[in-house]
Length: 199
Image (cartoon, rainbow, N blue to C red; front, side, top):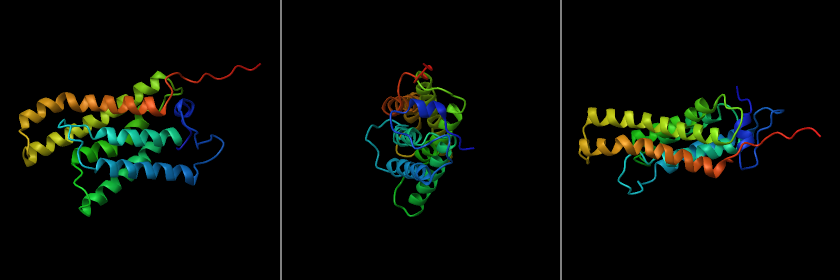
């Protein structure tokens, strides 16, 4: 289940911990759990005063993509998502933050979305970038759905619903794209690493 992801492994800009010949090590579990916690804690920080809905996804895609760059295995994203969700719920339970349901949703789904979109990708390069961007967009689309439902059920909040909706329809996918692109550029190579031909 936790096989090494060859595309992420070959595309990473960082030294990787995962080796095909070895099982999942404690260090890899530590990376995933830590990056999930970091994503939740960063997502719980005060808003960036951008006044545009959906920007919280940037805070979750970046650390979780880092986790997969260091420990590139299948289902690593799911572990980070679970770790982040537990951390986020604990922060809400103890009133340590007011992380919104939208931000919590995008943060929890980012890891699983990365796993799902990149599952069959055997090589790195630009296809990896497209996959990471798509994962960011999908996670933020789910966050938009949750936030929309919350507003329809519990009221519009501080901002008028019509104003929020007009901005959210383009800002949620835009921030998903930005989050995925920045994360891919920082942690992964644009060109796939080609295997060396035998001499």
